Figure (tube, chains in turn red, orange):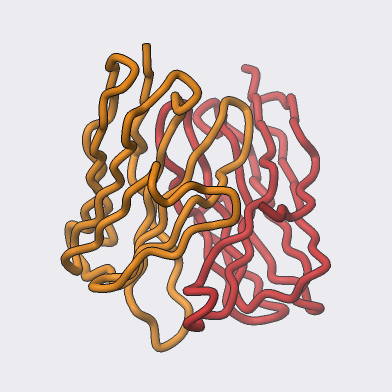
Amino acid sequence: GQQLNQSPQSMFIQEGEDVSMNCTSSSIFNTWLWYKQDPGEGPVLLIALYKAGELTSNGRLTAQFGITRKDSFLNISASIPSDVGIYFCAGQLVMTTDSWGKLQFGAGTQVVVTP
Amino acid sequence: GAVVSQHPSWVICKSGTSVKIECRSLDFQATTMFWYRQFPKQSLMLMATSNEGSKATYEQGVEKDKFLINHASLTLSTLTVTSAHPEDSSFYICSASSRPRGNQPQHFGDGTRLSIL
C-alpha cells in the first residue's frame, strides 16, 4: 500500500547522542503516530499527535505534528542501548465508513545504538 | 490500558493446513480491528479492516477467500489462513481501536509468526 516517506532509513549512533527522524507525505492527516517495533514483536505506540503544530514529549522522546499536516518528526534525546529498534511513523486517515481510521506507514528507521 | 493480545505467537504447520489467529482487546471494546502482514525488514502492509458484526473490508490484492476474517464480538477478531502454503509464511499482526469521537490510535498485538513447511 501507499507509504509515507520516512528518513533516514537507518542510523548508527553512540550512546548519549540525540536521534532525529522525520516523515513526509503528499496527503494531509488528522493524526500522526510514532511507533517502535522490537524484533519479533508488534509495534508499540510512543506518541500520538492530533493537532497541526502540536509538540508532544514522552520522556526522552519529542514529536511534532507539522503545521501543513503533511509531515512529522521524532527526536530521541540522550540515546541509550534500549532505544535500539525500528521506528515507524504513521498517518491516520479520518475515521469514516470508508477509511475506518486506517494507517499509512512509513518504511521505518532502524536505530542502532553503540556503547 | 489499551492492551491487545494475539494468539498464537508462533505457528509451524504443513502445507495445506488452515491456521486460525486470534486477536483480543483485553481492556477496551474494539469496534474496529485491523490485520497486517509484515515481511522481514519491511513495513506493515494492511490486509483488511474488520468491523464488529459486519463483513471485513479487504485491501486490493488480498484474497478474501484465502484470509477469512471474523469479528464476532467487540473484543475478538480472528484471521484464518485457509489451505496455507509456504508463500503464506509471514509475520501477521493485528491492531485494534475503539470507536472514536475523535480519532483514536491503533494498538497492536505482539504478532504471530507463521511458518508453512
